[in-house]
Amino acid sequence: MRLVIGKTESSEAGFRDPRLSSSLSLERAEQLSSQWKGTNFLGGTAKNFIDGEFRESMTDKWIEVLDPSTQTLLSKVPETTQEEFESAVEAASKAFQSWRKTSVLKRQRFALELQALIRQNMDNLANAIVLEQGKTFGAAQGAVLRGLQVVETACSIPTLLMGEKLEVSKDMDTETRKVPLGVCASIAPFNFPAMIPLWTIPMAIVTGNTLVLKPSERDPGAALMIAELCQKAGLPKGVLNIVHGTVPTVNAICNHPKIKAISFVGGNRAGQHIYDLGTKNGKRVQANMGAKNHAVIMPDANKDQALNALLGAACGAAGQRCMAISVAILVGTAQKFLPDLIERASKLKVSQGFEKGTDFGPVTTPAAKVRIEGLIASAEKEGGKILLDGRGIQVPDYPNGNFVGATIIEATTSMTCYKEEIFGPVLVVMKASTLDEAISLVNDNPYGNGSAIFTQSGPIARKFETEIEAGQIGINVPIPVPLPFFSWTGNKASFLGDINFYGKGGINFYTQTKTTTSLWRSDDAIVAGEGASLNMPTMK
Ligand code: NAD
Image (cartoon, rainbow, N blue to C red):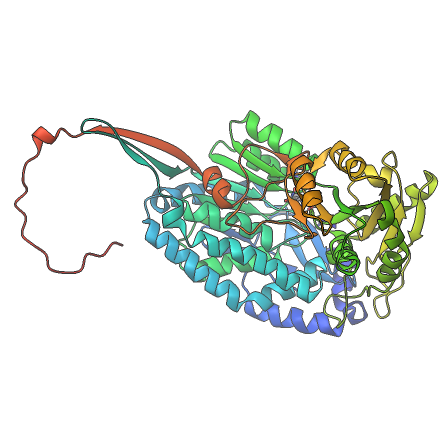
């Protein structure tokens, strides 16, 4: 990512030089650019989406979005100005006055329409993700599907919002209802540019809130496409707004008095800052953050299944998943699996995401590549063993891509490559003599997003499940992300806040509970004398 002021020579040259772009990418970029209003993928600009309109920013600060496989300039993202940000919050605030009163059936109808439109446009969204983020097409489709599942869950909003009622005394009832908060904000990371906006857009909106979303400045295309789909699904203007940028926009969100709640997903540095500033300003904040997820491989594991699952979870999406398995603990004789693991990893194909047979694509930026390679080098210096080295790989036809090959390092807990979230296709391998030793090792790690075990033994699985502290546990499942009728339940240093994303947590995060206690004395009952209507009663 580069922050540039105005137009630059490099960006013009970057786009015009066809050698920098692959023909597969160019074809998809042309297709997308002709169809969508909010952004284009041929060197144009990403628009703000304010009050139902895609508006060109007046800023003089632009951030370049480069194809991570080629460095071709795809688009430029504005650092949304303070004035534009204010108008987005104003639009959301105005829209809230009517949207909060819209019937739950209308909000459900919106979710139903949106899910159909996302399903129809799944490949378009996946194309945008491959271009801007670098995933393989299959991984991008999977990520859209995981976001779509949140929209599908939001379609049950009438049931999800139901309150409670009890006659607490003669003729006196107390009832609860969940009411919206107001204007909410969502701040998204680069690694799931459709899925994470879809964690918050449907949940915030069907509960009656309005939303200001800030996508990652590295890949805003999919979020802008989703905004257009929301519009097509009949969402009134101002209910969803999109602004762009970096720290100044994020700080504006945290400081704005009209914003009542912030959903953040991203790294720990930003998450801690947003949590501190947002809560200091009286906002409700949920922050899903970084991770170091361990898999424990027991000697009785189904070896083939465990090794494939391990590699998929470590290297899939180039390791840029907060639920990636980044540490494998081989217990006892499972250590014999290591040569096979290395051999399988060495066969993974790294290339551009549209290329057939690609297992994983590039990492997000040249800087990310340098950082990942630096962490691999640190292991060498600190006494670790590089068992498979993905540094410096050459990918045919893509000399300019940010590629890092699959890497396996034998390390200990004191090494930097173990302590830091690498966020690349790098698996740290450790050895333990017993299950107890492995469990202590996992629990000593400050993060708590997820952890998995591979075993054929029920009692071992049960012990693991009971004793592991991490919030999302997989038993023979490498990436145990719950479907969205449950909530995301990362914990420890992977989460700040009290209420989880989506599922029942999502409903609770985006609503506050009101109770009403009423007294209608039965002695006061009078019989109303209305005429009969024979029509089927309908609600709107
Ligand atoms: P990031 O923290 O760099 O950026 C996330 C968002 O915060 C972006 O919109 C960015 O503009 C903003 N931001 C960045 N630095 C900031 C700062 N100093 N102050 C204020 N705002 C700032 O994260 P990323 O690199 O885009 O995403 C990768 C990280 O996200 C990884 O750590 C990954 O584990 C985490 N992640 C967590 C989950 C989860 O559910 N736990 C899911 C996906 C990604």
